[in-house]
Image (cartoon, rainbow, N blue to C red; front, top):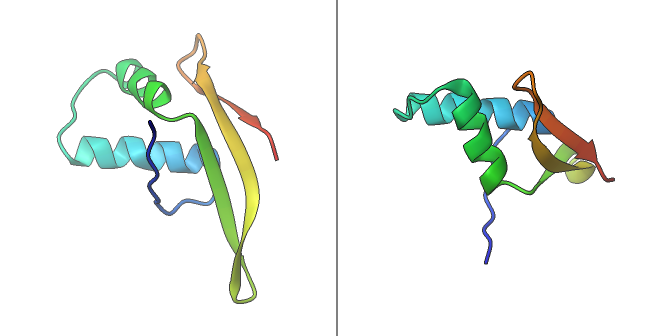
Length: 79
């Protein structure tokens, strides 16, 4: 099973950082590394779109691979 949701950001990384912010705003208060591990466990792919003229087009497809030793997201562009 899976799901789909949307939020506004200019990149895959920007989208994940915005999700962190929204989770904190909603009261999720866990250590940053734990929060990121929860996020990468829940999200497999991000589709980034941009506005070209009057149309939205796919600008990137990003696979969420995990969290590195420094606590940063590991992302892979597949588009």
